[in-house]
Image (tube, rainbow, N blue to C red; front, side):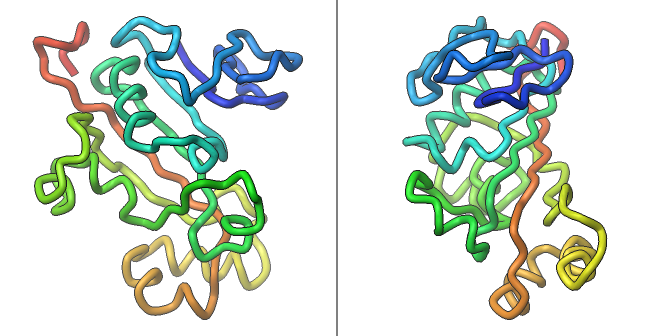
Length: 184
């Protein structure tokens, strides 16, 4: 099962679209601020959230719920505005901003995971990319290519001078074999 959470009118092909509004193409009407989501545990193979997470009330509760409904080994792809982007601050409905390390709190290999323990959800950060879906030309494309080689260095040294617009996080769900039907 593939879920497109907060799909609006742009649901991904082959996905079950979830949104709080009964828009054309929405399969399940549900407010993503209300947990639990109407899906059984460990059933989703892939989950997409495209410019949705920044609007929700509680990022940690949302990630906990993504972890619950995903199978072990499932791919979770999250698109959010980068915190330095004008897009992050201009929308009055945005509640959160994100940096390259924002999902470190859920990745057991990241120092934030053990230090803060905000959640029991475990997700391995496979990739973080800047402006992945933006046109591949112009100064932003050149800066994104450089930033994607070393996101932490870009963020620490250059992002304030050459701000990019969007972050894409690719995360792999980690579950114990006993709790995962596939053992991944």
